[in-house]
Length: 297
Image (cartoon, rainbow, N blue to C red):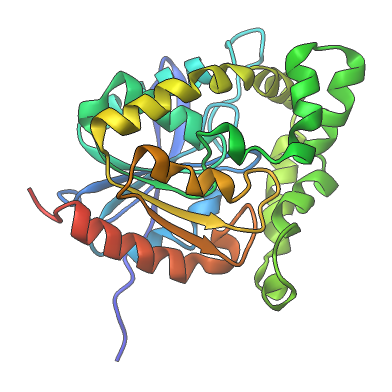
C-alpha cells in the first residue's frame, strides 16, 4: 500500500521588481504554513518537510532576497536590514493573497517572521519555532562573540571572523555541531555545499556582513516580541535541536515564560534539525496544527 506524495512546485513572483523564488505544495484551499528559512540556507532546508505536510496544508517557502534562488541586488541597491526583509516578506504574502497563515521560523526567519507578526498580528494563526530565537538566554555565548563584536563596531578586524562563518567550513560547522554520532550519517553533505556555493556568489560579502551587523536591531525588539506573545496568546510549538550552539535550548524553554501553553520539544540534533529529524518534526507539527488550527475555515 502506497501513499500519494503531492509534488512541490517552484515559482517566482516579483516584489518591488525583485524576483522572489519560492516553493509551494498542498491544496490551494488548505490552511497556510509560511516557512521562513535562516542563514546561510534557503527554502532548500524545507525539502524533506514540505512533502510530509502537503496533504493537509498549503506550504509556501520563499527564499529571502539575497538568498537561495531569489534575486540578490547589491548592497548598494538594496538596504539589507531585517526591517527591510520583513517588510518585503509582508509584501510577498500580499502578492500571493495570503491573509491568514501559521509561521515556521528558523534562525534569520525568526526575527523576520516575528517582525511580520508585530506588524500584522491578525494574520498569524500559530508559530512553529525550530531554533528560532526571541530571548537573550537563547544566544550561545561562544558562537555569538564575534557577531557581538561586529555589531558593536564594524571594522576590518571584526569583519574577518564573521566572514569565516559563511565559508564552506563555517557552514559545515553549523550543520554538524551538536548532532550525536548516531545521527551523523543522516546529514547530507550536499546541503552545506549547496549553501556554500550560493554564499560564494559575487556581492554576497557585503550583503551578509551588512545583515549580520544589523542583527543587534533584533535584540532591541526582543521585549516587543515577548509582549506580542503575552498579548496574542498565539499557539506556539518549539521543535528545537538541543545540541545547537548558536541558539541554545534555553531559548526554547523561555517561550513558556510568556506563553504558558507553549509546547516545547527538544530533539537530539543540532541547528538544522530538519536534516536529521524531518519525520519527527513533521509529525509534531501535524499534531499541533490539527489541535490548535482548524484544517478548514
